[in-house]
Length: 183
Image (cartoon, rainbow, N blue to C red; front, side, top):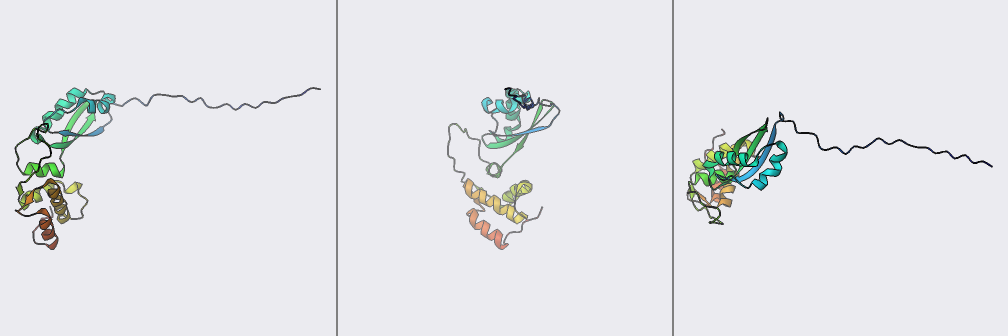
């Protein structure tokens, strides 16, 4: 007797394990990084983000230090816009850093002085100016809500507004005691 055996083979597509696609230098890449103003920051935190883009972390760190000199000693977020292997640095300050700057405190050495209480006093005009700068990033539906958000940040920072606790001013804003411009 003779047995016939049939085999069926299925050809599988060849799976190639390629590296990720090469970086296009003309593509616009935006990287956000939080740094202390006036300092070049840790190169170790910049290197993994900038190395694949073909940028020198040391050079970018020096650019960050130059552009954040106005914010010496304060933590600020920087937006790095990278195109054609050229990085441009924009400072994107938070509400707390704008408020601390409005308090006009002298720059402090962050390595020596820890857990700083900001016990200064702000005017309502200062709070409104900060709210106007942050209006586009606010989730409030009107300017009154943005001012109340900034007053909440004043509570966290520890400063007073018009010599009163920020929570009291918030209640007065909600009542309508203050004339708040919409722009």
